[in-house]
Length: 126
Image (spheres, rainbow, N blue to C red):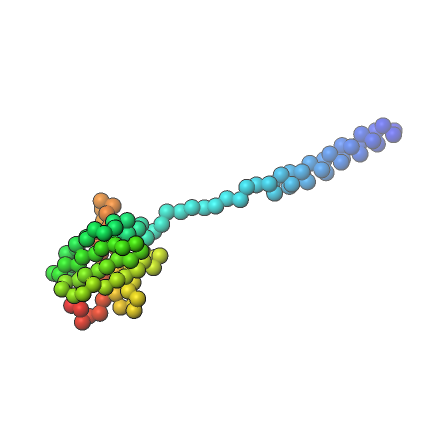
């Protein structure tokens, strides 16, 4: 009878300890990080910033031309015959002037190029 009790005790001990060991193993799971693709506006902004010291000229709906040159995280924008305005990337795909009056946003066209441009500015500049 003593042998039977010892065997039963060991069997119960193994049965109880097995789930505890499984829980201990699950705590050793390596933390994971999710990496996603930036939104289209951010991708377009990054493509524009990558073209350093090159004037990109855009024909705007007003009939005027806009020239954009990238210098680091800053773009220099010349609209029509007006003087240049510096705009900085805000991290969300927009380029904004220091005073907030100018906002430049690029979008990717069907070829994957940042050729679609929207300029928001004071009405007095038209």
